[in-house]
Image (cartoon, rainbow, N blue to C red):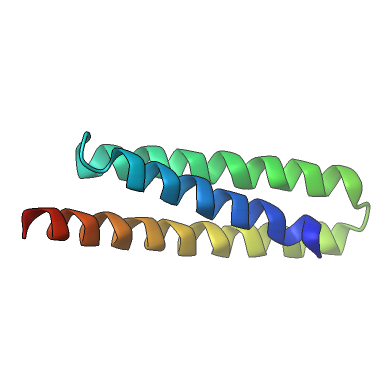
Length: 91
């Protein structure tokens, strides 16, 4: 179970850390784009890691679907975080 959840948590933490650290320096679209790339790389590395350690094809397919859903959810969290931080900065 940790093999499945660890890449998702790492992806979320790294992308949010990047967003919080560089929010004042860069434009919103740049922050979201780089956060998305970080998210994608972490989840792809997690996919390769899971596929190399598990030989069950059904588990690999389910894991790919779960990571796809997690990619969308983390992307949504990142966009909301950027919007909230930018609005807080303007106020």
